Image (cartoon, rainbow, N blue to C red):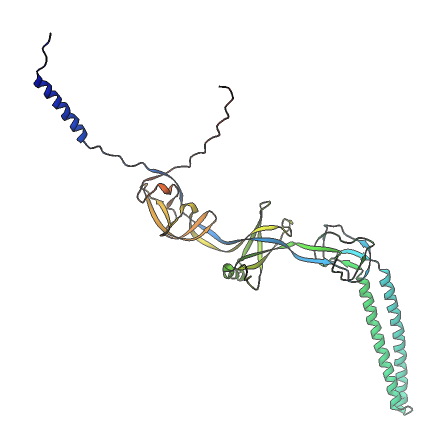
Length: 384
């Protein structure tokens, strides 16, 4: 049987063990750098950005004419179908011509009678002038025949006007298109009696839709800029139909109202569009953009890169050493999803667009793509 170790050796071993343990706790551990924060980034770039003013407008016919009869008569014939395109001067309807032809014949007969009377009066005046020169009649008698001649001539002239008026009334039986456009619903039919200038029921309404107009309103704050663009012929108008997403450009601003509406603070405008394909239709609502200029070589960044605080607008700039710098910037304006930077940023610099909440100035960051959305989990079967 072996002899036990001396007690002194046991104490020495325990002391050495405690000394090693104490040395291990006293040795400091060197901490590594914090991990880089994953962020989304974009590069500031220079771009020509149009200055536009948005609003809501209504498509209007450039001209609208309610066709009415200028004489009383019976509708005899219709020369178009509802919804037809017509040109200026195209026949629309014809009234019964017979009453007006009779009136014209009467006027012509009255004219012939008046001209015969006038001719006789001229002959009598010439004869009595010769007698007066020889002293065979008194001046009073000569004046009498002179008056008859003048009265007969005036009566003949009145009959000429009566014939012209009868011819004009007869021409009104042929009602023609006063403008080029598209006809609407026919309100009367053959055999109906139409009245002169009947305000209650027009025969048909014609709308000119090529070209066509769009009426809209903008805030009064934009009036000076719009007037300047209009004077320089650089105001361009475009519209989008929200229902069909149809976009049409090429509009020309033609009208600015002469007063601002004091109740709304808006001023009315009107632009004309060629509309050759009839894509814009009267009465529809459209979104209108009026371009009044272009900001050339503007520094732009995505709008989500700009943060607003009490000290102003700021962006995080990702530098070449992978650290970020909080930069104060001056925003010129915001256009949809982009922001124009006037001061504080240069083209080519990288800005953080997502992940700013995890950043502080000087922090390390790493640009990473957006995480893919989770795929749909397939439905599990009912079997276990």
